[in-house]
Amino acid sequence: YFGSSSGTLLSVDRSEAYNVKVIPASLSDDELSALPKDTFSYLAMIDAGSSGCRAHVYRFGKLGTLSGPLYVLPTHDSKKVKPGLSSFASHPTDAGASLQGLVDFMKEQVPEKDWATTPIWLKATAGLRMLKKEESDAVLRSVRGFLGNRANSPFLFRANWA
Image (cartoon, rainbow, N blue to C red; front, side, top):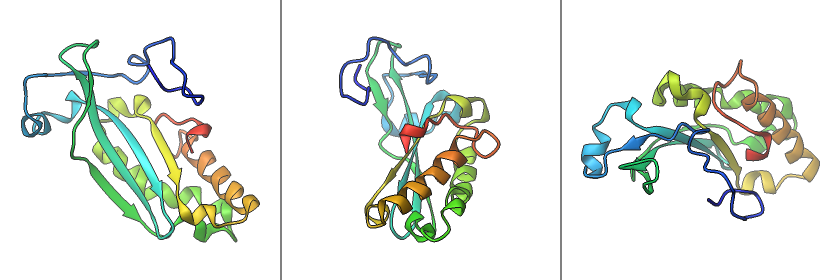
């Protein structure tokens, strides 16, 4: 399995840590999409753009058995909030809390029993890269502190995922 930051193979299957579920291999995408929410495993990606941040919530599972191929449904739900994280350069401690609307959206999309095993990644684009390094670092510190605090976000998060 790939997944380490160095791009090397991992020696363990992370399926259990992320509560990867088995989904029927014989169904079409439309039939899979119609299944109950608790049929799937989830992951969330926050795209931190210059004009706003968008959360994408993906449903996935292993086809047929836990040793089957990983399958991500081709459609997903998303929500955008404004402003973008780069607008917090002069008051970076507020950046993390600006993601509360996205966390609330993710809580609506993911069944509560799956929150603790649903990972969130945040990827920053051009807006943060245009800031001075110390400004972008301060904004990301706020974001990491917010997403890493269970009182704010019940999802699985590691600081190096942002």
